[in-house]
Length: 160
Image (tube, rainbow, N blue to C red; front, side, top):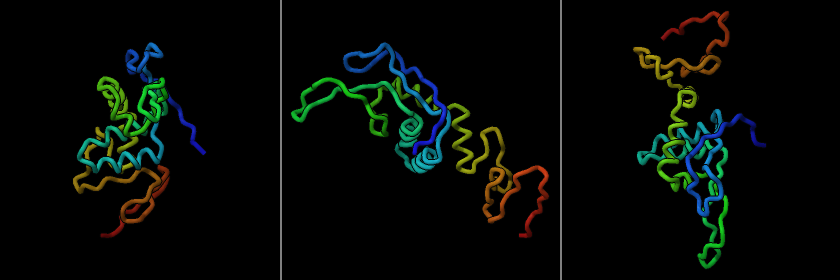
């Protein structure tokens, strides 16, 4: 079962598809990443080859109106077919289209989601001097203790 989420359109510019079947290329992007999206993006962050940008776009785009040439078994062009959204097809985008999508997913709302999933503080927050980033409220801290979920909870600092 697919989770439902809000989306919004991103104009990718004048149609660059074969046969120009529409006036503008457009992507429909998720307003927020899913848990699976965040896991895949975090995993791609370990790659030195820039894979994280392609994975972020592929996981953040819900759909687009892009098409490519369809070929028969002999390699002859027989029309067009929808271009599926994947890491491989993101890598085939025109540079301007890729730039627009990369800029979309660089916006603060997406950055906050990714940072929270990785246990990183928001960009505008300083990392504490001890280097430990407190977990998001309600999550388990590195020492295995559950963090309080309401402001009425009493907290105590465990002995070292």
